[in-house]
Length: 306
Image: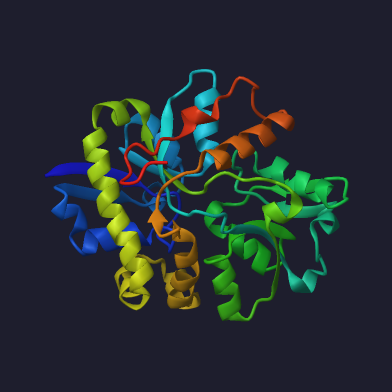
């Protein structure tokens, strides 16, 4: 039995469902893999999944495309690549409370934003405001990550970034009305988020192991799509107390299921998504022109290559 460690980007949620299903249903065991799923609560989010990967504290990490970029271009680069996309389309949005009266991005000018401090996050939101006709003036604040969503709900800050199938569903369940602004609607391309990441040297040396892992993982996500009711019972014990109390898990699962696969295929990444995002970042002068998008991902470990 081969042991693998997977560092999650967030507390367990429906973005991660396939991993827990594959573990519970024995799909990893069938593949000769013993998977240890690492929650960021283990260290209170003090070390990002990408950093854990660089330090050798995990074998695989869940992260956004931005992490792949920032580790590739830093002073001492660390070569890691996406080996699968968990979601085929962007399931996130910038959100405000409907009661705030902020009904479109340009109305965020001069307002407060609760940021996760992710690479390029603040610049992306400011550009969204500009693309909607505003000046792009935004007061960014950096609360504790687990408290960011509550700062919007409680009205401490005016906006934040959410996953519509998670915080968005919680808001519906609690009767909290939101305005949401998707990046694509304001001419901002976005990369895959989240993705499964591995160190480039592991991809080269343990490709067969990663192929087995992804095949088993794909079975888990496919099961989630076909059997959402059974799936949520598997995921439910891993949720935080807050999420168990406030979330309609089945509604979240059914909503995110629409994002898992494209043309019935899970995990595969399209070069156009990476190319378009990287070119946009270059135009914004956020990354060097020498950055090659092809270095950021590989489909070679998946069942279906593209």
